[in-house]
Length: 445
Image 1 (cartoon, rainbow, N blue to C red):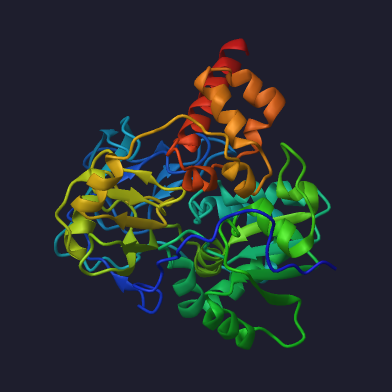
Image 2 (cartoon, rainbow, N blue to C red):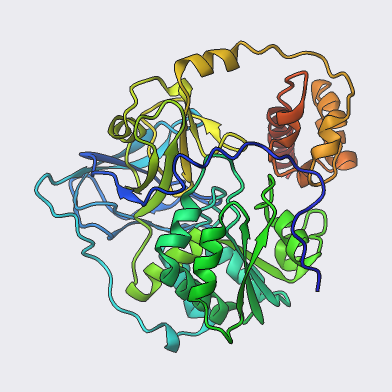
């Protein structure tokens, strides 16, 4: 079986992980007010099951899933529902949200849940329990985990890949989870294996996290069906299609999913949350977030309750700048925030803060015409032609981009924009093209 260390193309960007990789996870205090968006995931928004003035306890369900492609929400604290209304999002437009005011004197212990025997559950019951927990992909994509599990059961999937690469620069959330929650991670893997019936599990970890690889190997049973493989540190090693190609030498077909290649891929933090929450019948109410960057006085990995306002978080870590300095996620695939009033959500893997000086330098960069140097073609991990796609985008030929140049195979890793000497924002062009094509398809339906 193919056992590669890396993939073709990609970039060797400075990882900038040294400021937080050796710092143990700390807790962020509870904010007085929490904002829980009903859409923190790919799919239909949740539906509120509470009303203004209602008392809730930490961990209690406050919104139900709206169908299969949806997940519920749980209260991140004990308090009272203050309102249900429109609140700002990172991208700008407001979204329906539940506003929770915490009781100042509450101990904020998790008061909802019950012990559950996983060994007696059927695969279908496990998948339903994963949906009930509100679990989504915690690497940043926020795709409902139960949907991926159900899809994997419908195909002949033989391998479970657990993604511990964390290839985004600056972010060390997954690194710390592997070091500090290995037992829950392994338990989560066993739960998913029971549900999917895979023959084996491979945990892929980049070689800038060798201490995590060694630690997990020491925790695994010697005769078990779980193994750890170290891979070359290169971006975007952690992308699903890239990880499958690197470890198994299998290719996901154009427009297809990992299950089409006989593989199921899950992030290590998602696995850890499953191992922690399912045996206790609990929901996702907090996550570990890397907070770092030159504009942060106290960088680190922090356990943050869902719904905590970004302004409150940044004040705690020593920053008082503006929203335009802040990125949710990593520098390659993250997004700058439109307001510091947006909350931490299930998709928030990192908060990257630049200083005013660095932001000013970035915003002063000028976009020049494409010089057809071919650097973007040389680094694209999917082997597309970003230069041609960019030229078509400038002419608004979005349908040609999709039909003839495989636009939808692009997962917006940002390698092309990173190496472009003309500073062309190619990924932004591709996002616009995809959005226009989606709107056109919706009108035609």
